[in-house]
Image (tube, rainbow, N blue to C red; front, side, top):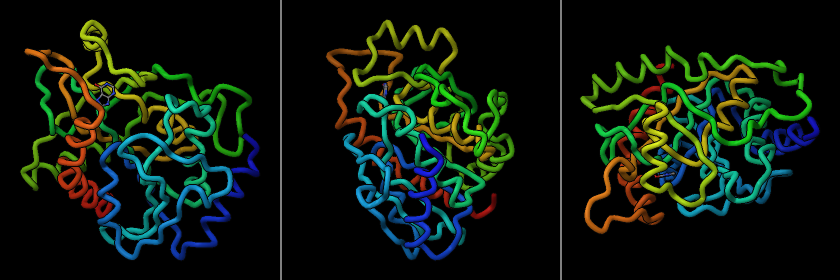
Length: 271
Ligand code: HPA
């Protein structure tokens, strides 16, 4: 995508907001409620922003929100774009580059995910310590030197200091946290039992359909990343007549939204 298109979107958003954001937040399925915690919000629908797509996934609204969280100026995406919606990767990841142009230094990504580690249960929060990207790499194509290098490092995709800080806060708040590897698949169908077992075998703890494209683009641009999954279903055992259902996934994510929000607000205020 032409650099000018990122600039156009960033200029439009800048014209609407007052403070320069330090942290960007991407709110996944059912987690958009965290946006309600943002103080003095300015809400910009995606449909108003030049070159932005419109979100259609269930549990996702389509707003860009500027304000403060934990006293820190933030911009949040209430709803993200998914590859399974048919968007090209450059559209899926455009908001991250726009947030870079707005000046963010830290990106917080969240998602709903299926637990495939047999210690994981519905409602658990998982710090993403690493990922396995099974989606097309969003950096394929000519490298945009405005943002970063051709071959960006991914050995520290998820910032170790932010992970340590989140763990400290969780201890203080007596909040149980899991930590693990997130694998992103295209979806939109959920996995078969054999597929869940396959991803467990190759080293993943949770499976979802998003996040890694935004993380790769953020790391390319030198943004520090913190990621968190809400475990919304268990892909490591299938008892009785259990089936996966998108509405139940969103409901489970909603139920964890407040807990995750408290942790993230504190993390941002101390990062
Ligand atoms: N698989 C893929 N994506 C998901 C899942 C799952 O089980 N749960 C929530 N998002």
